[in-house]
Image (cartoon, rainbow over all chains, first blue to last red; front, side, top):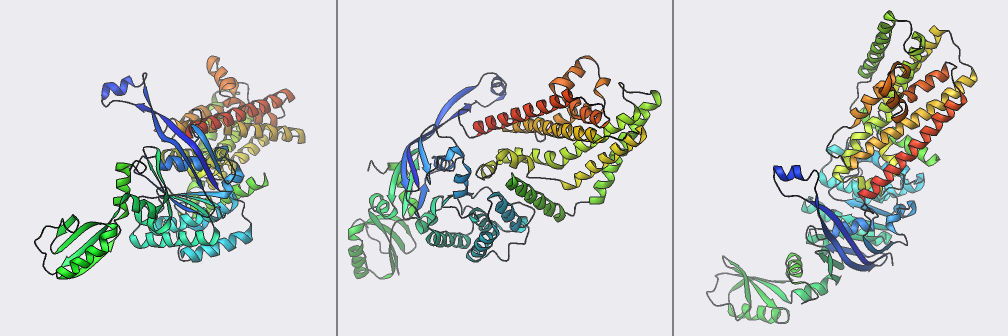
Length: 326
Length: 262
């Protein structure tokens, strides 16, 4: 196993101040502190080559946990090992076997082409010429970097820049990759490309990947396994499909009629949405097929669609209800 | 150590490319440096219209001192000054995280990542002024003088680096001041002149507390053959002490940043 986390805690001391002039002045000499527990008793393990999605609303503790795994934050208590290293000891060997990409922060040198950043990283990671050339060649092909390498970074689009960020982070062939919101702000097409790259790269090199994202699409496309964190606690850790079944024991039945029949839908399912000729029903998983058949038989149906509820809905339910409790 | 040499070279190269991207006005900068040195020389010259010595130093000796001051300032502007605002940026924006995940010493990285190479002109001009001063003084330094000079010069560079680094490290707490370097400048300006020129408390402070005077005066005296082994050793000891302090302070700041016992 590559990553092992047990009973991880992290609390911050936060300076609390009321708004206003007087309060601002008063806080110069008297400060009220409040302890915020960002991560509470989190334990998990990740095997080599896994891609695990780390989900949670803003401020749930995702990034804090990831930073502790990358050795950037010191845990308040609990143990972490990554590839056999204790991250916070910040050993050079540890740093050489992992990499961190933050979607909101760039490591590329702004005014000059990405290639220059790559060369700086080559020196920093002490990569020999041959492996550097090989790796760069491979990444250039996978990420389609050839036209970007000699353009100043500032002139690249967000998507192009993210591709270069990924390359910069992978030049030293890390075995563990932490991706914090890697697709944030990207258009749908680029998101798709980045996802495909991550999947391919993972398959090729068996890189262990932990990923946080707001986009459920990322998670659905990349991860078989998800961990959900809320208020600092891990509330679910397991397969994505199991989560969906557990939390959303229903399917979405989207039916388009030639003319919307004016009936009570209770007999078929719970109405989720209704508009001009289309109705969306929530139907229990087992009966979904039967219900669809009945609708087709009784009404003039133009189109019918059975699908799992969107992941957003599932996750939102997880946050609201908790998983273990239900 | 050799690896750090390679990394430094790579930093230098990247900065060179960056500089070229903007086709920085090499000649403009060159002229500005020349003008700066010219003005400094003129100031010294005007002083000596009134008197024959400045705190016990002759005109030529003050020129040597000025040359050393200029060289050291060149080094500061070359390697240290460009990095100060960036560290503030890194702390404010959180990109320091990237630096901390790199397998290279973070203090080394934040202090030498950005280099403004054309500032080395000031180092060259400083050397010129030193040569001129020695010429007027009609003094040819012996090999031992030069050796002593090199040792104390190295100590001065270490000392400057350490003081600068300590100031820079405060950006973990003082994230609102955009450029802390003016604090350093106002104190370093005092090193332009012989320490013996100052009186009373000021002299005490800039000799012992913030050893600005030590930084420029000892190399100048060494080159003029007025060194003593004890001064040279003292300069080295002070430099190493300050480097150690700067290192400790940086570590402390990092522990604060990463929430370890802070």
